[in-house]
Image: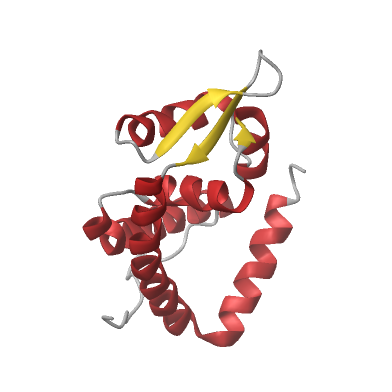
Length: 147
């Protein structure tokens, strides 16, 4: 695990939204690089983790749990389905579809979780215990803007 050091030399913007978007891109890029050996992206990892916790689940419920729209979820599911990591079947209601992990998906998720754990530990070490707790509190507060 490579330690993270330093601060970006550019001063923060007075716009909170811009600062959050820039930080989000930086963190996403960091996790993407860490997950690269697994062959999946952080958005795919998140989807697989949600499935692991809730499968089988309808597409609508999964989108609500992940707080993304169905169109984005369907777009994110397509490469996972094509790779055989998830399966989409008819639900109990014929109008709905249920999503579940395949054996291959569980294996990829297990391998990716080792890498995700390393990324998580690096970022938490970089932020420190206090800032990590404070960050999670602020993020939860911001998410509450749109319940």
